[in-house]
Image (cartoon, rainbow, N blue to C red; front, side, top):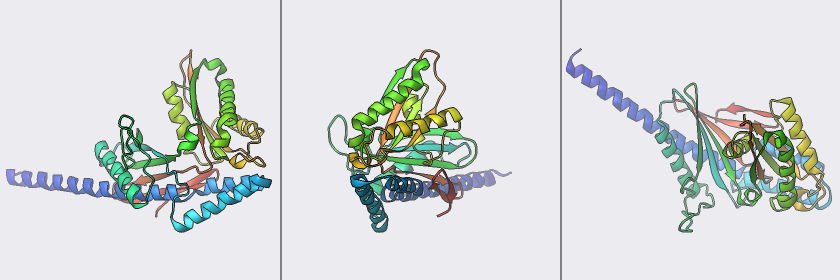
Length: 321
């Protein structure tokens, strides 16, 4: 091969690579904005159906509050406005296919641009306050915000999960470490204590995520991750699944009720995720989420096509827009 032909192939290859990078970055940025709008202005079907079920079990002031919540959901979707004025801090999980043709730093930049543009265009309430200066950044971008969790999988698909975590229910979250021999017992006690003490201020009916195992950091991360699971979809282990149902029943005996007004269920669902632990210790984290459980998932393929996850009660499916 001549030197000229080798140089031509190299230039063409580099140009093609650059075009692919720019195109995919734009696709990610555009669809992050789309996902954020979907997450903050509409409640997924599984959450909505579970709230309808809570309404059926409610009476008195609790029933009136549930009627207001369901009307709020309808109006937000109809008008394209935020379902809650607190559009939360954003937590983003990336699962990057080992053959996805975009480097991690380019993916992160595209997501961050999407968050910044989405804040202005959707719009989202700016909730990111710099810890040192005390100033609001105005863009929902700041030091370690959004919070990213990054994993790698086989294949060529990028999967993005977004959770918008409101401040009111976040105040109630708790975590601790404990000897594993009493882990399940302490987890139940911690969850019920948290709901009893803070549940009425956390905009119930609540969605509770619990992480069991690993270090404190592990437990906290998988507790949030559990809330990405469709409502009503139980843990794969029958023991843990039964524990989820037990905690739902136990929590609803508190009779805090919708909005803290009584007359109905306090908790709509409990999800538990598990991890292996040290012989001497394990982490436990309880994450409290208000009735507006706002999360969504997006897949990006190398050709620039995308899919969004459509949540259903107990499951869901990936759909093309």
